[in-house]
Length: 78
Image (cartoon, rainbow, N blue to C red):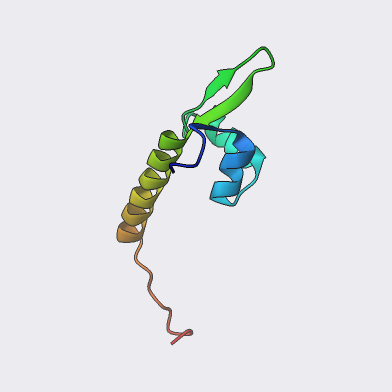
């Protein structure tokens, strides 16, 4: 991340996560993705390290979900 800026716009985050800006805004507003609001117009920024932490947390949450809900092929698929 040496060449990336410290703070990313919601559009930048959406591009990294391959989702919409609206989805990223929802993550921020729900408090799932830490962000700061700057300037008089209240533009949101996400620190790159916080985005990386969020991604790592999502990997862990997914591991837990998979462990609790193992994939079982049904007889019709076998």
